[in-house]
Amino acid sequence: MGKLRVLSGTEACKILEGHGFVTVRQRGSHRIMQLQMQGTTVTVPVPLHDSLRRGTLQSIIRQSGLEKSLFECE
Image (cartoon, rainbow, N blue to C red; front, side, top):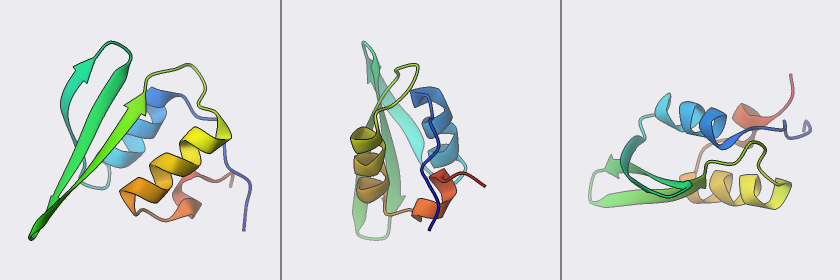
């Protein structure tokens, strides 16, 4: 298990977009990303800060359902 990278909100959005999430709206510094799945929709708010705090990034990972390894150092 690796260590989480320091990512900006924009970089986190690019990772989400690479796995099927799309931007549905933005208000201020928060972008709302969604993934349409059969029978359900996964919604993840991403703050567009220069660097996301570790807990915020962990929350994005948990809500998105993506693997933590996508956000870890190589």
